[in-house]
Length: 103
Image 1: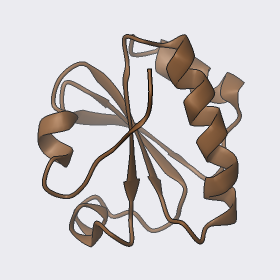
Image 2 (image 1 turned 60 degrees about the vertical axis):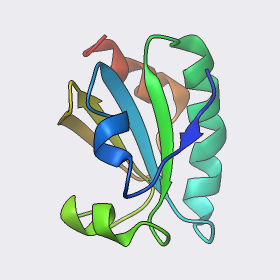
Image 3 (image 1 turned 90 degrees about the vertical axis):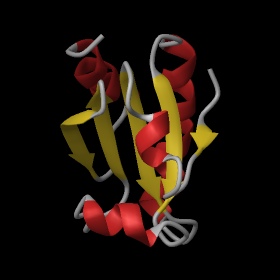
Image 4 (image 1 turned 135 degrees about the horizontal axis):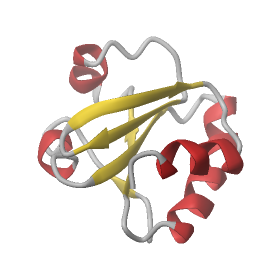
């Protein structure tokens, strides 16, 4: 599974069904750059989960609506509802443990 870039226009539609993980990030964010390879690795382990990235600078509407105040923030959604938020860097083991609760 690859991690797809999504935006304000398609966020709701792309994350409305099943289990999704959305990485809220920005190009200038050091911890976001550390989180990215973790998300890529986890996406290969869980083909049943939809993985996406959203640049908060390019998509301020969704970031504001969701109250994103720190990045990276990982949003775990199940059938369109946010069921978990992970703020800051999280290693593979932690991300897998959180996803396991919803898949």
